[in-house]
Length: 119
Length: 140
Image (cartoon, rainbow over all chains, first blue to last red):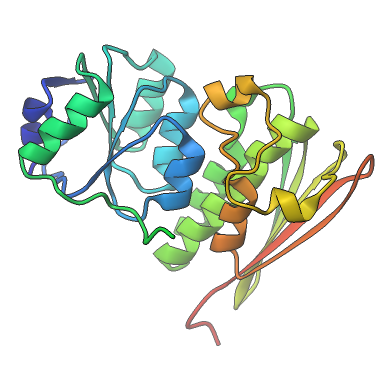
């Protein structure tokens, strides 16, 4: 589904200046630990996180993640938004908690976790 | 080609700058995408470790025809039990680091997973040198 449809499904708004057309979301991952994102994610997922710091954006840049949604009503800092703009990363924010945001997205049709085989 | 970066140890917000810069350089050089990503992730983990555990250090990257070599050198406290440190989920990072999204005990295992070859030269009180080699497939 398009990033716009994904945003609608999780009641998210797109952070100003990071809008992008033609970005499709097929898999998603919810995590607050960026080390785990780097250890397990292999696809170009939509990352949902409650963590707010510049390393979230840097992890996305290095992992080729093109969309990040901040949950629980948190908003990225201007520095984070700036780095996201420079790297073509779409930022979203929603008031939903992580579990509900992931659930809504799953219900809307995003069913892949985007991680490597575990265990 | 050789690239050198100083990794400052006092600013967590800047941790990863060298890796991000290196990723751009590799992309410009037309290195295959999978190799770029593996190099960037392995170096980023090492860079974060350097900042979190060792007060920064030096990064040296050599790009050859058929492999990339990353050497990350610090003068930190060293790793007391390397075997333990290599296990998924084992971490000595302080709680503050976990609040920042790291310290999940996946750093060294992640470097091992992404590099074709990982060697760690460390001793308590003597600092740590991490050397990672990543082969460039298809290169003659």
